Image (cartoon, rainbow, N blue to C red; front, side, top):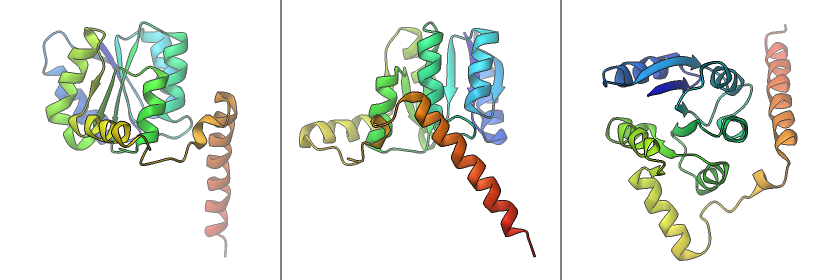
Length: 177
């Protein structure tokens, strides 16, 4: 199984690589620190699975996942994140993820998610499953801010890029006398 690791923290990618490469028949074929790099690696390497963080610079994990699933339908995406908001999970499920694993549960859940994706199944960390069930039963999502569906994909991408440009401008002003 060929995997790409996409997380903006090098230490996380190094730990994932070690964890994965100790498993027979699994190989990390590339690492990305941004969503755009992840998409490019998928285009070049044609991996079976991308393990993707949600919060990344340049293009976030949600948008990168949407583009990967749209353009490379044979590549599965497993989200590895610390976020456990209902809206993130619902949006990522709609985008076509094969798994959602919390970073705090990486040791117990990541391999199960990879194996499930190999069988074309969706794996959710137990905490995530519990959250979604509670939301479904209550019929009112805990995180009802549904702003991600208001904008088109390209609009969200431009907004995200603008955010990074504005942050850069403010950072320059902070260092002025």
